[in-house]
Amino acid sequence: MDFQSCVNINKEWDIVGARQIGRDFARKIGFGTVDQARIATAISELARNIYLYAGTGKICFETIEEIDRKGLVILAVDDGPGIAEISKVMEDGYSTSGGLGAGLPGVKRLMDEFDIISEQEKGTEIKAVKWVR
Amino acid sequence: MRIPILKLHNYLLISIQIDLDDQSAIQFQEDLLSKIHQSGATGVVIDLTSVDIIDSFIAKVLGDVVTMSDLMGAKVVLTGIQPAVAMTLIDLGIHLQDVPTALDLEQGLIKLRQELEE
Image 1 (cartoon, each protein chain N blue to C red):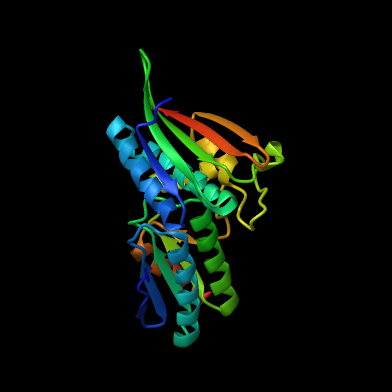
Image 2: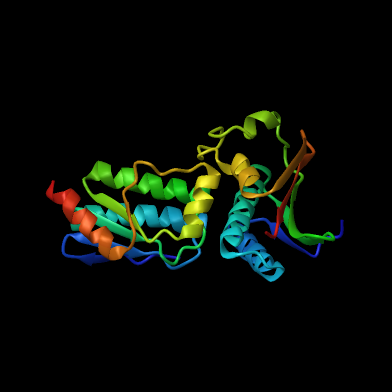
């Protein structure tokens, strides 16, 4: 998939930058206020994970259009250490950084579709989709 | 970016009007605690009317600052949480159950006064 726009995540402030760009993107596609907040929050969680665990990576946005629906794809990619136990990080309350452990399970609930591929020592790729209602 | 903390009698009032990054959130936590210490304030209202995103990190910082202030003897009330923010917090699985909240600044001050009189 050729992504329309990507934000590099290298420093902490990029988390804010990514969610602002993502929110604008969501608004242009036609998402309502609540879904814009959901999308921006999901991006914030994904960007923070990249920053905290991989150091650097990027978040990309793309509009998808099907015959009867339209949506936003968010792709979060890093080439960090990867996730050893994906089932663990998808549990509510699991955190290795002293956080709330709400990040990834939260993103899954905030978005309509959620897919994670991670390989140790290679990196992690998370794809999440939200459809306009 | 520093968030201004205003003193009014024995209350501290804060209105968060920037898109909070992690560093500003941590800085605010430290600033608020030292301001409580300096001023001897017994009540704090943090107004979130202009905040349109609270992710898990910011939620943790806010929840923690309420508990920390409580340890120091100051009651904190969070006010003005937007409908979209309330909905995304629940999606994230964050319930902030022990955190006092109120609809707006005015209700927040009323709540503080009631709590402090008890």
